[in-house]
Image (tube, protein in one colour):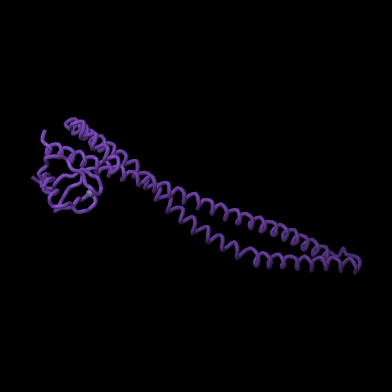
Length: 243
Ligand SMILES: [Zn+2]
């Protein structure tokens, strides 16, 4: 086999490896995205939980105050009835009942004022925050679902493509001389899918460094295998591919 033929086989192998590499990187992007989305989802859920705790606390206070006020109203009604019933005998007793009513009314309005000033504003703020967080969470959940679907779909697609490319690889490798494969695989470990570089107009297209004119001519003549002095890739002249 001529050096030219050997180089062309390596070039073909390199093309297959390049496609394989693209396939892997394509798939590799989505799992990372899913991971990021899951992280965001966790953070949002934690914040939503915190806000829910705050809202529950406020609701607890509201209930307490409501119960307190209900009891006070009951007291007022009871005293009112007593006063109207005419069963109250003494002025002292009358005054005591009337004062209790007054006190209860004062306490009720104090409760209502406190609730409004201390809790209702905070409740509104937390509710609004909760609403926007829930919206954000819904967006993330739908994006997550989309990516998960895509990953499944992609894995299905790439599975076939990968198999096909690996078959091609085996077929090409079967034609390559063992020492060339060994050389290629060594470079391929460093430059995955880019072990072979094309030389165009006196430049290595792997690293874009220039190659002396005399060497460019020798590379084109392909009497032996050259590697780039800068990057180390196996070199093939563009003229050999297009010819
Ligand atoms: Zn180079």
